[in-house]
Image 1 (cartoon, helix red, strand yellow):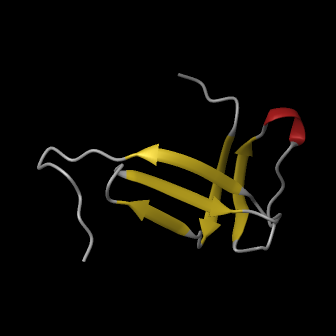
Image 2 (tube, rainbow, N blue to C red):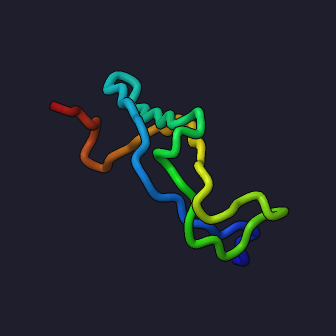
Length: 72
């Protein structure tokens, strides 16, 4: 499959994990510079440039074949 966008994002993102719902929430917003774009190979409409800050907000349901994930 040919990707229409191929960039690398590096850095550190804030996240929380809710054991009851097994939901991982990643929230790195405000273009703080904690995440940056690098290694741009393909980009949609020239939207990404090396060195620019990157925002990420995602909610993911996490599953494990061994059952619920409990952090201690």
